[in-house]
Length: 157
Image 1: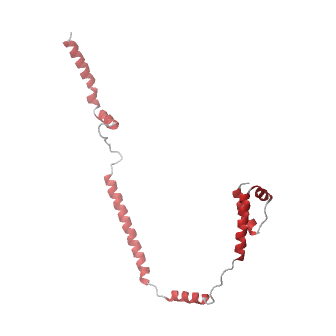
Image 2: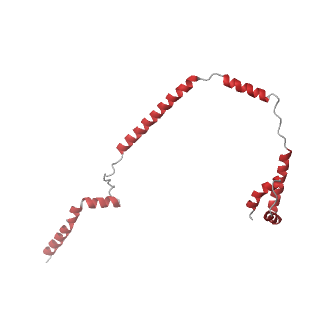
């Protein structure tokens, strides 16, 4: 077994609640660290057995009861109770107004979902948008190229 599993069983053995299992005894023969840990636990348990809780003062109970009566007899600020609910209601309403305003103004500034966003020229997307937008003009460039070649042939026979 691993040392962690043995250490979980050590507390019962150190407290005297249970006895060491054969597996634990076998492990303790080969592991001096676990033996040391068990001895430390036994020493701690022995110290805890010797410890005595201090006795409370003979007037502790009397003073405690008197203090409780004093606290119960103190007048409470009743206006805090009726003030709490309206303050909470007003703060909640204010939060709702602020949230609504943020939603309203942020939706006006954003672009609609079907709007076409143009990319800056010189980027790949911008160049593709420019080609798509001016497709008819660029398609006529082939005609101009053919016309220029034909004029060069006629000029140089």
